Amino acid sequence: MCGIVGYIGKRDAYPVILNGLKRLEYRGYDSAGIALYDGSTIQLCKTKGKVADLEKKVSEEMATKGNLGIGHTRWATHGIPNDINSHPHFSNSGDLVIIHNGIIENYASIKKELINRGYTFYSDTDTEVLVNLIEDIKKNENVKLGKAVQIALNQVVGAYAIALFDKNKPDEIVVAKLGSPLAIGIGTDEFFVASDASPFIEFTNNAIYLEDEEMAIIRLVREIKIRKVKDDSIVAPYIQELQLNIEQIEKGGYDHFMLKEIYEQPSVIKDTYRGRLLADKGIIRLGGLEDYIEKFINADRIIIVACGTSWHAGLVAEYIFEDWARIPVEVEYASEFRYRNPVITEKDVVIAISQSGETADTLAAIKLAKEKGAFVYGICNVVGSTISRATHSGTYTHAGPEIGVASTKAFTTQITVLTMIALKLAKIKGTISQTDYMVHLRELELIPTKVESALSKNDAIEKIALLFKDATNFLYLGRGYNFPVALEGALKLKEISYIHAEGYPAAEMKHGPIALIDEHMPIVVIAINSNHYEKVVSNIQEIKSRKGKIIAVVTEGDTVVRELADYIMEVPYTPETLSPLVTTIPLQLLSYHIALMLNRNVDQPRNLAKAVTVE
Ligand code: AGP
Image (cartoon, rainbow, N blue to C red; front, side, top):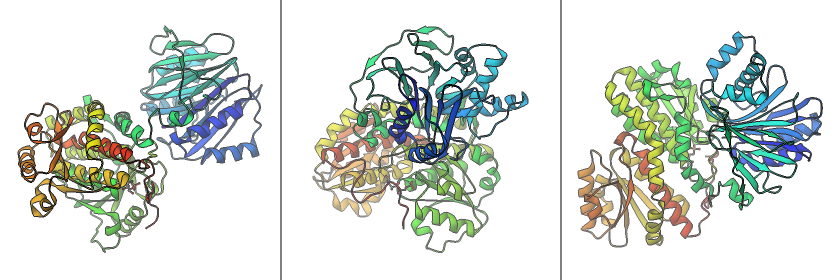
């Protein structure tokens, strides 16, 4: 997830773009850059670091005049954060310059073709490939920039929000959108382009939000024209009058980053498997894994080290890996692992899971594992983070920046990556049938839609939250793949509402916690259709006989638990292996609403930090 800004019009472009980038930093902040047309050529400056670093570098290196320009603040997906991988990117001729938010999945094959045609590449990015593809088409087809963009975008697979211009035609900006957001601000004698309206809302509240596979050639001298990328047909522009303030725009219109990130899960789960999961072809392709498959296949065991929510994702992975890839898995709190003098050999594979990529205990566990000869694989959300650089290889989740301290979309995207790894290994080892393999791949592709469905129950969940917001203790119970989800649900409630909550394997209740149950105790039970359903139903009956208040997560259409529970939160049917990706949704929403009703600081709960970089 990156932030893009463009401007063409009566003002100096630089201050508009720079301030716009500052407003978009929540979308990505590992590097930034700006390109300005100064009346004869393109001035470009870019740097690793934040927008403030860019501002300093511009003040030292670049003239800032001109009323046409584009700027970018990056959240790396291809190519680590450094100066050369930052946007904007020039085409080989230096005539074109582009910024891009998204992922071009087939960039490698296009890059190879362009190299054969004599193009040179300086960065590792998919974006530099796109701008040179556009240049190649513009030259060889002898067409204008807009037409070249339209042809090029019909050759790429992936997601994009792009803005680019040609120094030989400095009266226009060309933009296009698929999968990533792009808004056009309509001013008087000026146009703005951005990932959302925050960079231009102070200048105009008239905006056009491009739809997927739409593009626009923005010229000052005429009305804006929206076209379909597919066939170049004209689309009537729909100009909206925005009533949002800047803070609301940054949160995508949601009241909190946490809620925005909960609702981003369908799209970021899709972004995480995009280009990696080709279900129809039965292919899972993970760049960081391909060269190390043998390490996993021949491993004596996999040790997963992580903290907090990432540790819960590891627990889910234990079920998936052992169930399907038949590889022994141990899941360890990184903080315990690093100090208990563990037995580790070269035959061990360690998977380190971390959203921030900066958690001190997890980093220390990685160092210990490497010292003892283990192969260490990272699953991080921040490209170029310390943990991602400390591991031998890894796979990034494409969740985009997670601003809310309570981890939500990181959890589901981590599980998405772990599931793809486990299924790939199972296929190679032959421990999963072709049928089961293909079913799981297709079901994984359906997860975003199922998460959408679970999110649609928000209002009913909010009503339940109102009934239990004053409880002082909660129990969360689950079995099998959903035992870790019970732990995660309890953690979410604890950390943002400050209500004590415990997660337990449902069967463990009889070994102590059942003594806690009375009419004041709400118990959240994950009771979806699964191999454990009958046993969970009997657990619910045990709770009921002790007057516990039961809030059950059930599969849509359930008729049995519906009669036993006091309240239900429905999710669509999902095979148990993938069910944590869906059952966690109502638990996230329940904790969010309870915390809100208690007037907690949902995005920055007391005593917590987003990245625990100290012991
Ligand atoms: C989860 O909601 C918490 N914010 C916390 O437990 C977090 O998961 C933990 O600190 C690990 O962080 P990491 O994934 O960035 O390593």
